[in-house]
Image 1: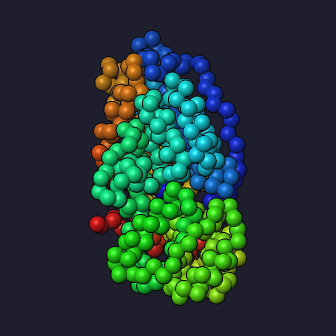
Image 2: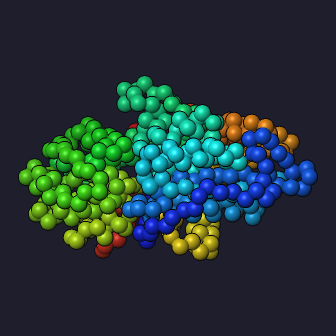
Image 3: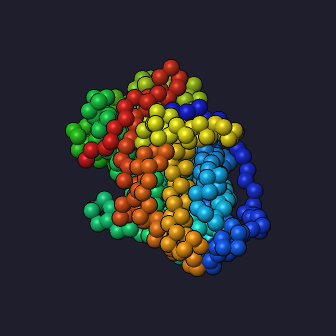
Length: 411
């Protein structure tokens, strides 16, 4: 999940029902064009956790897609096309995500969807979109199986759904990058590994542990916690008694912050490290103890430090969104822009009109999309994975996340 040092506000905003303005709109999958001076409406769906503990991530995803759509309309990026968005709240629940996917598929104006944030939610949605040829681009999913199949770890890679793409790199990259930093840069020797039993967290922790051991480190213990629980004192005592010099946690920031707090209260003054799921100010505020020294990895370079992101950062601020663009903002903008570029190619190839069977045509164009985006070069490999393998290590310093090291992953 997948970037940048930002101030996030924890919010819980609700979204409206799936509704579209019929004014000027046509059946996008049935064709339409601009010869009569009317514009065809193309909808980009958004699915993310817009309420609940993960809403700081989800609101940033939604707003960043909205900014991309507004920019495309302002610049008349695709002649004859007006873009619109519909955002649905999955609450980080797979079943809700699947229902949202069905709602989006049912609206024929929807030619592409940005989301979801959670890998477990994505698993429930992929098949729904695939049956309808609806292009899906996640700005945050990192589980390798989503693009490379369940047997990816054995080298038997098989893309499950041709409709699924992502602008965030996978945990194959992120987990190994984290282990390499811990072993080579931080000089850690004995790590205790904990995960939240969820698709993202368990997968990330497994990959980290494998790479850490491959590099000569020792995993002195493993354990699991349950999402939304708050008492992790038993695990904290295990970590202290194991003689670990560090903790790696696979999961999200609400549990990670509490775990870090309780590990330190147990007397183990050691750093906790996690992935992009803990890279949030909420991780820091969840802990009564100082988090200074704790670490997180996140995909990409810090957005605010990229020359390519200056227009995005400025545009987001000028748009006046209530919530920050957060961890996945730049990747969400790029995901939406990739869909816009696929629509553009489809229209250009059909003499300036949206063709019949537009969803399948947009999907075909998506595989060939390549442009310089907010987060760098945006393109996809044969599995639908991003070709961008840049990552960053962040550290809590003075009660705030600070970028510590950015690099392109080297196998």
